[in-house]
Length: 450
Image (cartoon, rainbow, N blue to C red; front, side, top):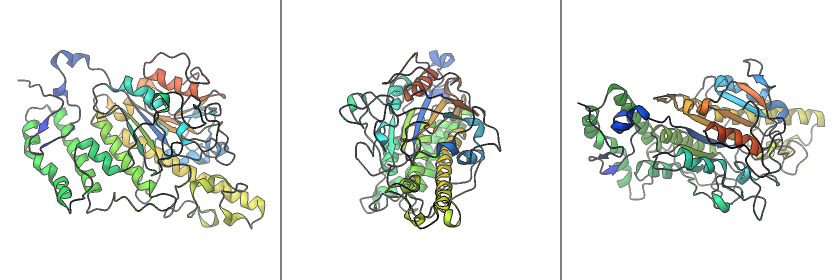
């Protein structure tokens, strides 16, 4: 006998509503044979651009061992501090070169324009139309409880620096800046223990309380659904431990003047976002790794000897030699030697940024779904506010797209030939089955081959 289970199941032992992953038994009987394959979009923003000459591969297949210096870690990398070792994602990524963002973002270091293909209104930093994530959210949402998630690891609430997701008429999307808040929003449990341990004890024991209900539920499920439910509870258990007050892994630090630990918060945001996608709580996520100013690499060994990045901010490293905001320890060196070192440092930080995107790609690829993996149902976009971080040029933007939603083909480099951001976004929008011949202001038509 086949039982039908409502999507929102009240787990009585918890006394709270916990969103379950999509199970076959949740599908209405009439719709079992007509299930629509879900599609998802993730935007990943990291500031300060790159060195385009060291980032851009030639058009065609991405060939192992023949990548430009900034992209070599697409072939895999070793563990570093909180980030585990990762295998190659070379076959899962497409690099898009030559995109022109200068007609959209007319000022330097404006993260708020990074996901926009429309010029600003009344100023240079508020998009005049919804950003790409917002444009896609209504079409992709389905029956998920969260239309989209806007996440930012920077504490800055400045409209230009602390936001990348905008609704119509320049309205800023509500941003979650604390992983504990995100966990609480997603799973209905308090993440901040302000009552001397009461909420922490509840949070630590919630899975024990629902165990009996989960075991009874499993008796009604097929093997595939049982495996999904087990995987779901295992993921939640791991994140409960990671975010619990005893572990200290997600304690929000006292923010110094230039910001906090973006790396730690961004990793937690990625892990939670992937879990939210796998549970079908949302299908659209935007993640801002940092604002343009604050992220540093203290504690990370990026570069060796004098080429090491040290404690300099990503912003200072990006400007090499001649800007006021630069790493001044190179000032006393011969200019050619100083430039060699400055170039090496930009490659080191650019590689770090690529590794963080690769971590997201691997995380999406590690989750099994009815259609393969989350990565098969997703397009994940890597974006920045500048192209060349040194000159502030907003041409030759560093763009990577991963995933296979809409039959997207990866493992290659596509030359946009100077087409604008509207063209890039039009190409992505079409992959989600939305018919657009042009998009943006200034408008652009889809990029050939993308």
